[in-house]
Image 1 (tube, one colour):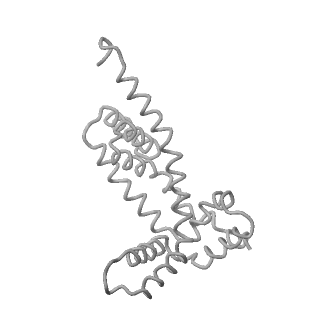
Image 2: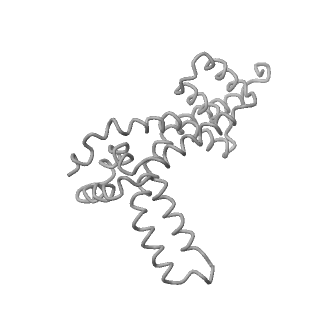
Length: 204
């Protein structure tokens, strides 16, 4: 059953390679939100190195390292591209894209059930599933007198139903972002602390 599911999908999911290409922009945005400018610059350098920028690449890297205006603009251009690709991806393509994660984190009969669920909604987009969950969560937390107990029960079932699609994808993507972010954060901390304790005569 699993082999029938994934057969012939490799070529079809090549568009998701761009998700990997634009991940550094998502990481840079996160670092900017956390006021970690050094780590954000590291993420942007990573972004530039994965993009096919050509002869403008070295100049762009130099601008990032010198902290010129435009760093955040670069992140703001490519982070939405990352979001667009992820949200527009088909459920069946995401299953194949994260196949190693599914096999690692879902064991036994539960894995076969995951295959069945992702097969059932295979042609839906991640955005469709995500929107259903968000709408249901809003209804569940609503204090409006117009939202009945029956509405809340339906919302719970919706979250349970479509959350089986969105929850693993969210977690798997977060794992990939963390894998990219952690070494950048580590390097940034080393740079910042080294600069902080540099003897006065050596400071620029």
